[in-house]
Image (cartoon, rainbow, N blue to C red; front, side, top):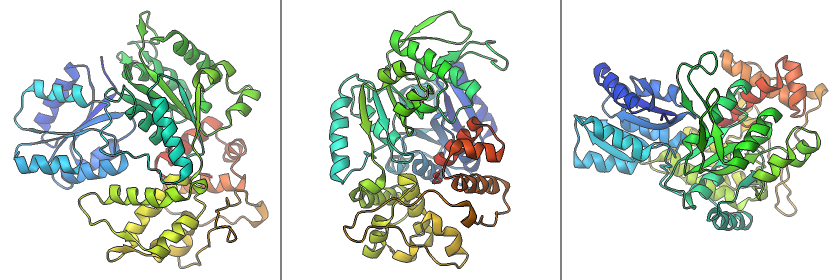
Length: 464
């Protein structure tokens, strides 16, 4: 049975073809590229594992691994080389690979590595970083509930770390050595979501050239994480409810019932009770998912986490290829006093920006460029000050609505994709973050808008 996709990065055309054939014969779905640069383009949420050559023209396997670890720290990476030494093996493991194989190797070795590591969590550290009393309490509660089989619904604003918390729960459970399969329900086109969740047989619909298992099958004996569950359409909600109740799934176009042993975690940034009242979400499905609710507060409500998360992000982006800089006290004060409307995703952007802007071994206050400052600062304008509560030192949220009369769009960049992103974000601000009005203004469907916003969030863009 195929389980999502393996990314093979190999610049030798004959060997690449052999690797694809071996994995395909063993029912793995494979994507093959010939360079590290192509690998970064091909890297998406469907990739469950990477086999990469070390010695390649341009970016080598070590650099590729560092880049992937920064983007997707959970993705298992196995390096391949014809120049294997004990020292290289040790270096590879230190940098973050889960394993290392030396060419030439038997086909059985490749298949064995794929079966061992595919869809496993390869992170070497606990990424659910907490320092604030509020989040410490959440972590303690999450660890306790992880030991059960209870379904959990995680609520919170976009970018607060809901998937990181879900992975932490999985890693603390008895299913930790089994797959963790995450899917963003808002990022998948409406017509494809059912097939991706439940799988399909060959010929079930136009374009179904071969049978494919769904995400529930991929998560057998492990955990499935349904992110943005509140965006799922009511007709598909009914089918999901039946799968959860019966603990079995039937592929589209199939007649065979597949028994499931899967723990279900879900998350949403919408008000689920309000969605139920507006008949946008089934109440019976909500209670099936919401057996144990956990609310993850926005970053502005747990300010003590900011320093700890910033340090973790620095460690991740520097790796072993760069000396990890210190953050000066004024720079840290600036981070802590900001309201972080984009939460951890925005903080990640700011840290990466600071690593580019800094000189020496310390990140200083003027290296901290917040999202709303970038255009003005890089263009020579004046920085805006973050909104804070000076009396008690508690951060207050910034106003999210912008009056139309005072709204002045910035100049569009030349790149077409960047222009689209800028237009979407400006229209969102113009409409005070209202998705329906924004879709109408842009003359696109609400579903298309949700899909584009989900993609922007995955790229770390702070969405109003």
